[in-house]
Image (cartoon, rainbow, N blue to C red):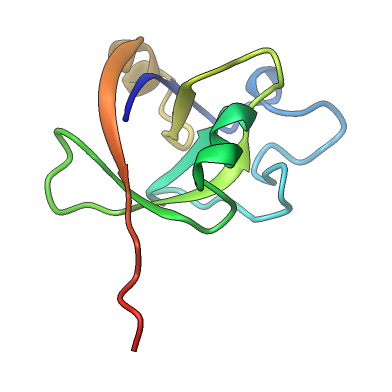
Length: 107
C-alpha cells in the first residue's frame, strides 16, 4: 500500500497535550532507537492495528511496530518515530512510501 510518510519526535509540540511526550495514543512508552510508527486512523480498517508489524520500502530488513495513532484529520498516512532527533525528522520531510503489513505464520 502506498502512503504519505512523515516523521515525528518526542517533543511537547509534536505529541498529545497533557501527556509525557514518549507515551503513545495506545499507552505504549517510546524509547530512543525504537522502530515505531504512528498510523492514520483510516488504516485501522485495513488491518494496521496496535502491535502490527510492517515493513517499509527502502528500509530493507527492518520491521516497524505500529504503536501510535495520528490525529483523526490525517488519512492514508504514517508517521515514523525519530526519537529526539528533530534534524533527522525534518530532513526526512514528506515522502510517498510503500508499506506492507506482515502476517505471522500460523503454527
